[in-house]
Length: 396
Length: 102
Image (tube, helix red, strand yellow):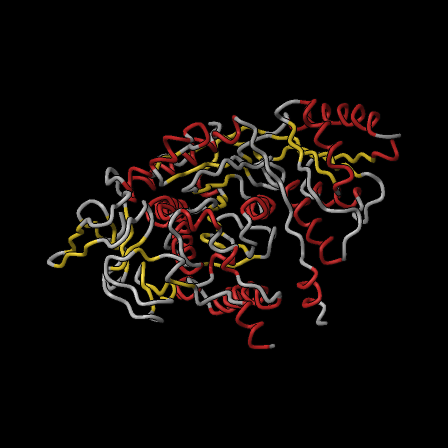
């Protein structure tokens, strides 16, 4: 089993598997400009357009900042440009300072200050070129699997997810943890009904309590809103694929994290440790936001299982697609990277499929492009703090 | 694969499970053997969907992966398709909580 890859050593000490220049808008008002600047520059520039407004309640703003700073600090990012419209509560200079803390080259640009969008596109382009030159100075050196932080996600689940793709990815996570690396999975609503299994695996009492508390809060959100989770969990697509209840979906979903002890659970977009073993992240079940949370936490690679066939990617982290559904592998071949369908057909064991996933992760770390990267699938979304959650946080 | 494959067409994930998962589109009338017992499918069961291995009474817990995945909302005969029409979650039921408050 291969363990080495060549990556980009950052000042922080972490290793990147890509050398992108990130273009980070501070609100929806500067998102189009950010996308425009990156699109004109080329594939090395990656924008993270998002939907957040210029003025957000404090708790929501802090979360948006944590995500943008985290993405900027991700080791796959060699340099960053923070773009503001000019009316945001988020201070672009402060954001840039937080990203630059480890010595990363960062610039800021204000659409209003430079005189509108045309000027911003032009200035942004110039700034990106010099940032790209700075990023090119990164040492390209050999690194070990123990330095990888791999985020694990599932989307478009069906019954094969819990039978084949998730256990195969779980096996790859066990291999990564054995090699000394970090694996992280999330989507707290999909712990509901399986939390007792995860709780038993927590390394310490503190982690166990935090985990159960987070699951209770997610379930309480449904209570808080007086709604039934069943309309959304499992989703209509999940149901068509044979998943009947959230418990069934969760029991299948948690197998993607493998079988090692749960070392901790971090907040949405909070920094994940290097060499940390299996660490959970408290995120919503919406896959794009959940992936972004883990990338903001420092994951260099995402492994994404899909039964029904998701095509989603991420601007700064390669997303490796694993399907356990033989029909999806045939039908959506160009968007899939690893076929775990052989498990369903009885042609491969879970361990064999897990080894394939692990090998693919190392190859992608070494520069092999995923289907999502080739097709520039770069969805980006930040979790909004719901007004009812805000009220609860504030104790109203 | 995890679990036990029945006649190449269905999968039982853990001992004691009350349902099996179809590994191909299974037609009504097909007989699936599990050791020395046989279950005849009462409905078409699509790939990835479940059918009951044993008769279940209404309100009984349904087990898959060796764990509870929900409870029946009606009596289910062995070989019947088990899905949202006759099995429901017991979790994340804000609607029930709201009902109680009213």
